[in-house]
Length: 356
Image 1 (cartoon, rainbow, N blue to C red):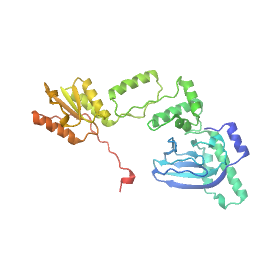
Image 2 (cartoon, rainbow, N blue to C red):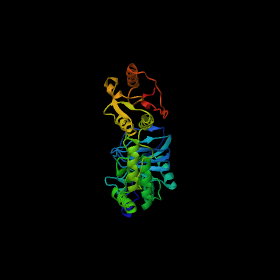
Image 3 (cartoon, rainbow, N blue to C red):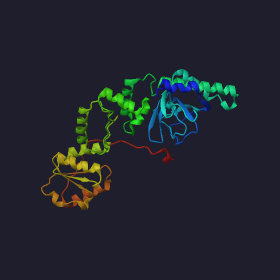
Image 4 (cartoon, helix red, strand yellow):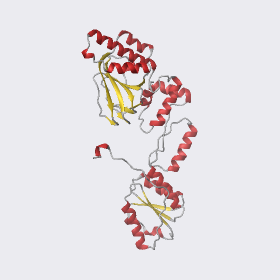
C-alpha cells in the first residue's frame, strides 16, 4: 500500500486532524469488535498479535509496525503476548486519499515512531488553535513518511520481493486465510496487482492447498505429490493439516491389519475418519467392516477368522470398544493383545472464560 505520487498529493493540499492520542499496556488476549468515528493509527511498540476485520480478513502485526484502521472499520485486536500500543485518532475528512481507505499494516521508520509516541501525549484539545495546527501538521508528516516508506512488515519490500512475502504469509497463515484480498492487503498491493506479479513470475496465479482433517494419509500424500509436480511453488500448510488422532489411528490400523483376518472399526457411518480406517484396513489385505456397536456385528464374518483386529474412530466412546470386545469374548476364546504405534499426549487448554 505504498502511496503513489498522486495519492500523496492529497497531503499537499490537506492535512490530517489529530483528535486524540494515548498509550496503553496490553495483556495477552483479544478485545471485542469495535469501530471508531475517526481513523486510528496504532503503533505496536511491543508484542505480537493480529487484528481481525469485520469481513473476516486477518492483519498480523509485529513490534515496530503500525496498523491503520479507516474511520468506521469494524475490527478487534488479538495480543499473543504482553505488549504496548500507541494510538492516534486522526480525522482524514469525508474523502480521504486512497491509501487511507483500507486497513493495512505499515512499516514504521524510527523517526516516525518517535514522532507518533510524542504526539500521543500532546492533548490537542488543551492547545491553542495555532498549536493544534502544528500538531496536525506533525501528524500528517508522520503519516506521509509511513505511506512513502511502504506497507507490510518491511518498508523495503518492492515488486517481486512482495511475491516472496506473500508466499511466506500464505505458508504461515494458510489455515486462516480466507481470501486473496487478505494477502494482498498484508503485502500492500491490490488483488489484481498481486495476481499479475505472481503470474508474471510463476506463470500461474497464486495457488495454495489445504486438506480435510480426516482424509486418508496415504491418499493425501499421493495427491499432494501430483499437485507439487505440476505446481512446484504452490503454498503448503505450515504443518500437517490431517488431525493427529486420524493419522495415529490409520498407522495403528496398518499395523493390526497386516496380521488380522478381520478388522472391525467402531464408529458412525457419517464419521469420515472411521470410514477411512475401514479403507486403510482393506488396502492392507484384511476384510474390514464398520460397526456402531456390538449388536451390529454379523457373526458370519468370523468364519475362518483366527485373528481379529479391533479399532475405533477418533470420537468413538471407549465403552463401545469394551462392548464389542465383550461380545466377541462371549462367543470365542479370546487372547487380547494391545498394539501401540503412538502415544498421544496432546492436551487442550480450557478457554479463559471457563477457567475459574
